Amino acid sequence: MDAKVLAACKAAFEATGDSLTLGAPLYAGQCAPEPLVRVPLAMMNRHGLIAGATGTGKTKTLQLMAEQLSTTGVPVFLADLKGYGGMSKPTVGVLQRKMVELEQQGALAFFGEPEFDLDDLMQTERDGRGLVSILELSDAQDKPALFSTFMMWMLARLYNALPEVGDVDKPKLVFFFDEAHLLFDGASKAFLNEVEQVVRLIRSKGVGIFFVTQTPKDVPADVLAQLGHRVQHALRAFTPNDQKALSATAKTFPNSDFYDIEEVLTTLGIGEAMVTVLSAKGVPSQPFATRLIPPASRMGPLTDAELQQRVGSSAQVRKYRDPVNPPSAEEKLRGAGSSGAAAGADAPSRPSALEEVLRSPVGRSVARTVAVTVAGALTRGLMGALMGKRRRY
Ligand SMILES: Nc1ncnc2c1ncn2[C@@H]1O[C@H](COP(=O)(O)OP(=O)(O)O)[C@@H](O)[C@H]1O
Ligand SMILES: [Mg+2]
Image (tube, rainbow, N blue to C red; front, side, top):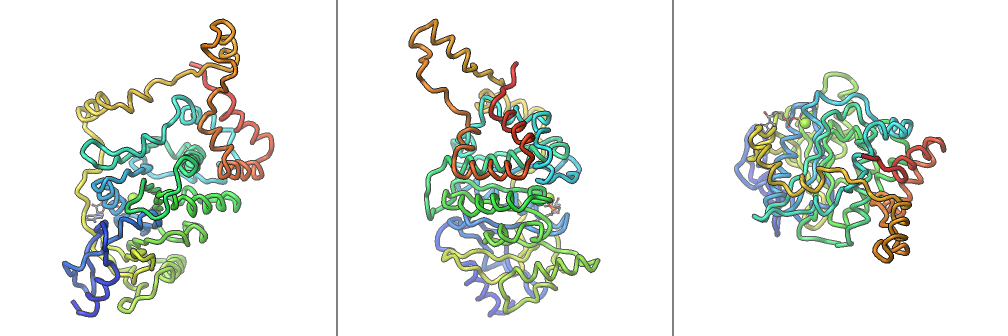
């Protein structure tokens, strides 16, 4: 391969500290074994986009990144919406119009008790590997509102719970949103502003977010501008609309001295992508066509025996298996009356995590967005459902 291309590639993906290895450069039909195409681990909280047509290798890229993060001790959270034949047209718009349906969708199971403890996401295993948590929504297509709300709720909660860390050697947690267009389809401007704000602010807490979707235009421009790393798999250009999306995508890349980006994007094979990353100095690298390494981990369902073994030995399963029925204020007061100091009538009852989030600045502004975009009655319905009532068992 041309020595100039190799030298530029080496400069683009130079890593001083630890890094994730994505693959090796492709140029003029050749793949060079080195220099490696890498992302500095310290920059993984600067967010990213994995894009490309269906079947081009986006989820494999996600898997490759997730398994290397785990190996370096970084916990990963990913939402697995696949295996279920894709999603119908779920939107944040739907969320905002039909929030009352949340209750019927089982929101109280998500937001109920025992409450989901964020510390459980931030774990490393005894061997030092970061825990990979997968949110499996088996019938997600019926529950778009629940999905979007839960994701935003988790991010807002994380934002509120985590301390400022500034620059880090490695992220505290990395989120991957597969099928990310579902979050944004039909969303109001106000809701998108909230997403943009959380995405922008959460990086100072050491949390990285990667969106996985077909084209960059699935992601609102203000959010897209926050995504420092791009792994763009192949795009098709069958129709005039495809062609437009392709040109627009090519324009989101930094200039290349070597490639016609538009052309390369239509000729990449499965498991190949155009990659640009934020360097350790925070500068976008020149993009390079890259052949990605196949992931080493298995991504697929456990066998029954494996599942039994893991469920049986899981502390988290023990913790969350049984819904609890927290005492009502009335019960607490009654308890205080009969057993004196034990229940402590003056001890304030612990606010639920959702209540804490909604009281926090980001939470308040999320709630405000919700409040202004939803008819008052609907809002009262939702907030009542989420904050007031508890399911009785
Ligand atoms: N890096 C890779 N190495 C080897 N095979 C790959 C790679 N990426 C994708 N593939 C193959 O392509 C198939 C589709 O990839 P997938 O990640 O599911 O695509 P997408 O998420 O873009 O729809 C995979 O099941 C696998 O067989
Ligand atoms: Mg996929």
